[in-house]
Image 1 (cartoon, helix red, strand yellow):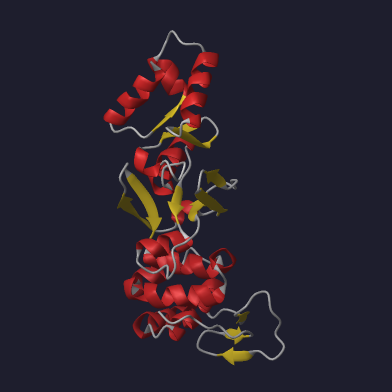
Image 2: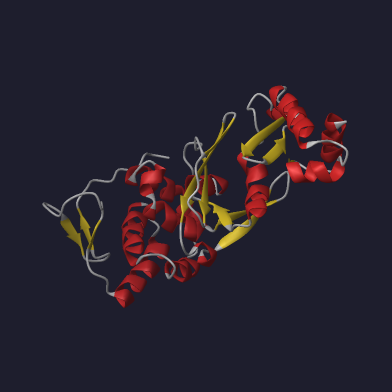
Amino acid sequence: MFANLIDDFTARGRSFFTLKDIQGELHDSSVIALKAAIGRLRTKGRIAMPYRGFYVIVPPEHRDAGCLPAEEFIPDLMKHLGEPYYASLLTAAEYYGAAHQRPQVFQVMASKARRQIHCGKVRVWFTFRENLSDIPTRSRNTRTGVMRISTPEATALDLVGYYRHCGGLGNVATVLSELAKDIDAERLIEAAGHFPVAWTQRLGYLLDMADAKDVADRLAEYIIEKNPNRKLLAPWGTIKGAKSSSRWRILVNTDVEADEV
């Protein structure tokens, strides 16, 4: 009976469920019996549990991976948790054709600190930020619904700010060289107001490296207006031997090399 219900969910285009959902459909079944039935289907690979109490239905084409692709359950999971989110960093860059190499994990910006998800071969890494609801996003259709993703401009700023999550500044520079074509100068200035000015200074320096002149020139005007203190290009480094970039008010204390794309 339980397996038939899962088939019925699939036929209705539903890709996830909770124990409460099952109880609402199978009134005569005990919690113990339902959990046992869920366990049997998990063993067979027909369902998976990326988050405690949240189950996804795994179609045959994804059973080798042991889970649905992250983009197909993250929107439903975050709605289930009642939290805002957006796909971010290298994951967002990949959707704009700028990841350079396919990310090994699915990166999500969340409004609360959360543990990583390991579901079969699928890996989801969460990064916390306080002002998440202020960050510009756009919708992207998936097989199972609609997902929120940071705009190219917000993605660029996030990449610089969370460089440690993105393979370092060298990899960020490489990704930006591909992402720059999708960045609108005015929308970048609008987005910049929601990020630390230091991130904008570092982004400008890296955009110059990417030969994104129009965007970089407009961003340089923004920096002049803000008149920030000088910041280290590599926050982990020292000021000793650093060269000054007056355009970005950056102290260049490391060599950043982007891979050829």
